Length: 536
Ligand code: NA7
Image (cartoon, rainbow, N blue to C red; front, top):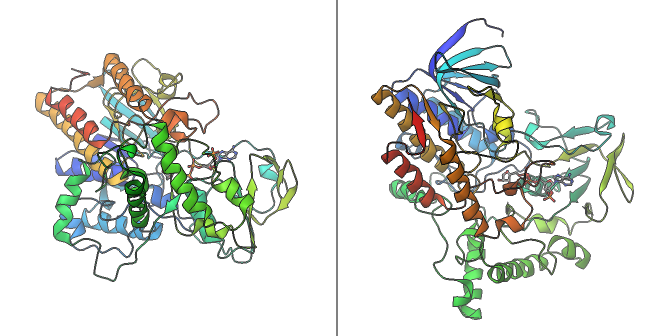
């Protein structure tokens, strides 16, 4: 649609995942003229896009849902870790209960936004020709909105289907009996390979760095029985703000070697048996910070994992005796039988470190060793995470500088929600926030409430422009670096550090101070009249 009409609003919210949906509801409840725009054709955010076989969240419910009783009192989950389709059904429930559809425009990708200094408003333009003039722009594009496909030559020559899994077709292709390649071993690659091993005639899994994934321990619920009685929900939701990673569990307040070997093994075994991210984020408090503690955890993971793999040469690649990087400092995934697939005769591991991909050919993939033939190549090579979803929009502030120019030498934000030189612009679940160490709904509420409060404050005081000061931004970056450098995070190559995108500056992109400290900091900023911001 092309429309010359300019829609005037108080707030434009971008992205219909947890972040955007929550803000549409909150802004509307506070009486603002607000619209939600979304590139896809329905709600769900990452769950709208990621519908590949096996796509599943790795946060347990009810933590992975909104805290509004109107939503949970009559919503029942079927699994402890719901799959993508069930999550989309949840979003449909949210959309109905919160009556979101009337204020949502789908198929609407915001491609640019420029600041009109005279009116103190953003003018946002969309790919389908819409224009919005708004007092505030709030972007919840998601941390994984910009796909990354390595620049292998020949991709266009391939005669089969080549797909990035976050563009999985809505009409499920029939993969039974097909020859399939899965490239990548992030959460996506792990989930895909596990599921596709059940249908493929031949599955080749191309791995550069193996994933230190751990048993999920999925549970199917007997409806209407759920994991927790609903009476416990309010406490569970409130508790998310008090845990380092926004869960209902936290690190043990002891260091690894405070316990005897026997005590430690008991703890490890217990965490292992519980599944979830317990062995990662409910373990000894020094695991992510002290090398020897980290090694101890890795060695336990390694021995458990090697015991599941029949062939020594495969085990040496997937769970090497000597750890490749600090355990838990590259995103860990949860799995349901992943390592066992490599024991099956039709599943093959291609070690991309030993035999890298040279090109994609008409028939398949050519590595430095040989050419493989495929019907499908599924390229689970990830995203320009955290910053990409924002910087792919051509956002220009009053000086004419774009956001991607502002970030050319490294990411700069204040509180992980705003940027100096970009007034009245906020974002959630992006860089320099607890994103990725905190689940989506938790961040959506915590940051979403904060953003609505800023705008309420502006309205109350009769202000029309708020902008982070460069000094605030500088101090925030110091905090980001201080927290990350106290941990082992920078020692591992990962998208947390921007390593996965060629040319992207290497730096910690997430806030590693934990959710409670983050929440305290942003609350104090608000309580002190939005310290670090300039208003007029
Ligand atoms: P990830 O976690 O970024 O994983 C991407 C995978 O693709 C990873 O195994 C990479 O290996 C591999 N990759 C990327 N580029 C290349 C090249 N050029 N050559 C070979 N292999 C490559 O993305 P996911 O989609 O799995 O998960 C994203 C997040 O979604 C996840 O962390 C959760 O938070 C949910 P590498 O490790 O770089 O050696």
